[in-house]
Image (cartoon, rainbow, N blue to C red; front, side, top):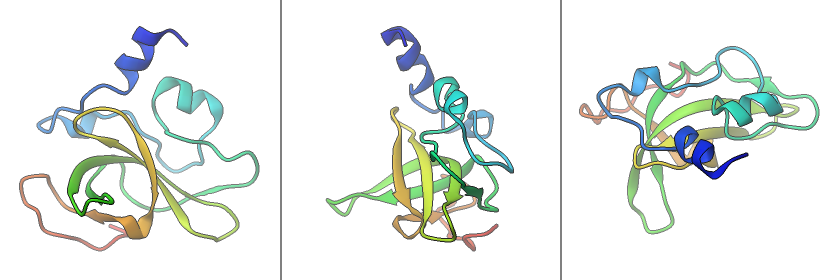
Length: 118
C-alpha cells in the first residue's frame, strides 16, 4: 500500500462528523476491509461480530491513565473469547484493545457512559 493511501485511511477523525467514519456493521472483518479502512484487524479463522452500534464514540484508557477519544469501527470475538475492538483515535491512526479497555459514550461532548451493547 502506498504511504499516502495509508495516511488517508488512518487520518484524523472529525469529531463533528464521526458518524461518517468507515466501519463494519453486522459481520466479521476480512483482509479487504482492513485495506479499505473499514476495519483495523481481521481474524484468520472463525470470528463473530459483536452487537455494538458502529461507528461508536468511546474513550480508550491508555497506559498513562489518559482517556483518549476514539471512534469504534469494529467489535469481534473468536470462539466466544474476549471481545476485541478496532478503533480510530480522533487524532489519527488506529488501535486494537479489549472491550474492557474502552468506555462507550453517546457523544464526544456528552461524556456520559452507556451500556456496552447499545
